[in-house]
Image (tube, rainbow, N blue to C red; front, side, top):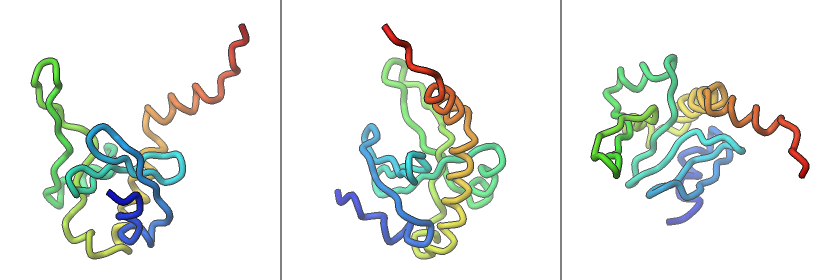
Amino acid sequence: MSSHRLDDLFAVFGPIRLKRFFGGEGIYAGEIMIGMAFDDIVYLTTNEETRSAFVNENCAPFKFAKPSTGEIVSTHWYAIPDRLYDDAEELAVWARAAQEAALTSKAAGRKRARASRPAIKK
């Protein structure tokens, strides 16, 4: 797969880069992962405030089965509405909301805290 295959879709949003992410690709804006692509479906990260827009559009969350138990896990990543594949301007609005959700997530806060700790010298 081309590392630039989603560039046109995100052109209005701004530059992105793709990195391997399990069986798909993570979509990064700078150092922040705002989405992922699996099987040609783009998913964006959500939080309590942004998730309702996806639910209102009948978008499905990314789900996977835990290898150890087979339990199905529903994630905070939601498929974008089909109409956004043809509307880069509106996709940019949704991608900016995903970027904000990623920046304010608990995981991002933990990463920033780890990065700000002084290195331990041996």
